[in-house]
Image 1: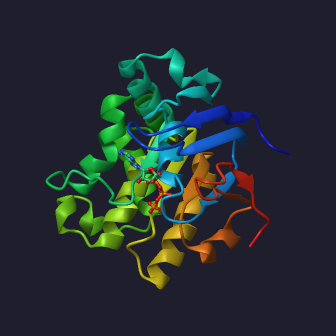
Image 2: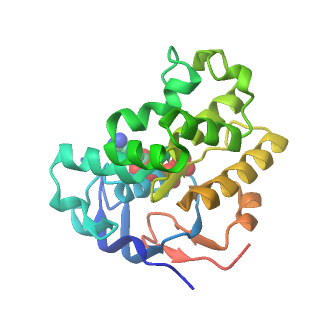
Amino acid sequence: MPGACVMELANLRFAWPRSQGDCLNIAALRIAAGERVFLHGPSGCGKSSLLSLMAGVLLPQEGHASLLGQSWRDMRVAARDRYRVDHVGYIFQQFNLLPYLSVMDNVLAPCRFSALRRMAAARQSGSITCDAQTWLDAMGLERALWSRPARDLSVGQQQRVAAARALIGRPAVVIADEPTSALDEDRRAAFLQWLLSACDEAGSTLVFVSHDRRIAEHFPRQILLPSINEAVAAEAAPA
Ligand SMILES: Nc1ncnc2c1ncn2[C@@H]1O[C@H](COP(=O)(O)OP(=O)(O)OP(=O)(O)O)[C@@H](O)[C@H]1O
């Protein structure tokens, strides 16, 4: 049984400033609570732009994008930023860790900005530090690394820290933009298993972007974002 609607896009049109045409033109897309969604398509088709619209980083020129029933357009910039950190854990392709901060402090960062995440983390695990430990353990990150600056870690280790940071405080949605592109095949498979299990544990909906169709089989729902000329998001048959 699909859960309540977490994300909704309707009659959405988005164009980058000074671009020739529309980047995205999506009639309808709904993502339900607890879904595992694999979003794919060729380079430049608009996957990262779509994630930014889902997370309220960008606003469409036309149509509607909402998270948990709240339209991004109805919020001012500061309110959008707060709402995003409250409800979205974002894993970036380049991790975006603060290199001079420890692994633990990087993971705790969302709790510094979001009272909601802070309270959820403390309620679930007893303290925000214990919640950070939960997710670092869930992502298989060795304890000896937790006090090290993020810049000392390997690419694969940094990506796991980024995932733990996304999961702390159990946000409604985890968005992952090409999180495995810098990992070799073994590390990619392990990262994916850790992330899927951790999202189950957190009860977070997962929207995962990748070029790599081999990953698709791990996701019950796959969405193909065709080239911008076709300008329609279509549900793809399972790979
Ligand atoms: N900041 C920007 N300003 C102007 N145009 C942009 C900007 N970011 C992306 N675009 C354009 O929007 C289109 C979609 O880009 P986007 O990064 O969303 O695609 P993508 O599917 O994620 O690509 P990739 O798989 O290569 O990461 C591209 O034509 C790109 O050149």
